[in-house]
Length: 153
Picture 1 (cartoon, rainbow, N blue to C red):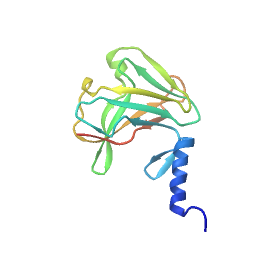
Picture 2: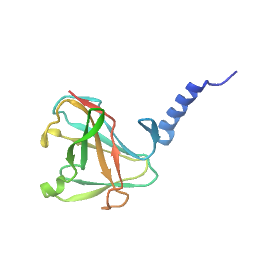
Picture 3: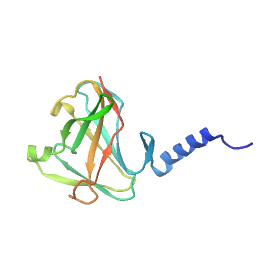
Picture 4: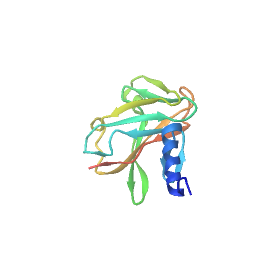
């Protein structure tokens, strides 16, 4: 019989979803909406990490940014679960520098580099980054854009 077998059809559908409508794989689910990708999957201790925030959703999102960069959480994978390792959500108030809302339109991207040496170097392990976002400018957090996993050696 002509056509694709079941497995190639699934792989084709997943590839089409990723390329055309912007879905991404989180565990066993394909989801749409803001997410974050790192520039590499392996870093040395103290290496800066560039994250790109992709807005795959249908509505604009806003991220509060200041002179210290975007707020974020760094999670470490330990004992088969994610644990918050670093909370860098309120750097603007600590550094007393002005903040602004960075708007990211649907299907748009924004990149930021996180210089870990400026606030402490994570130890070797498996990590991910979560960046909180809001649906309105200076609104309360409505979600988090979660990155791929990466390793620090």
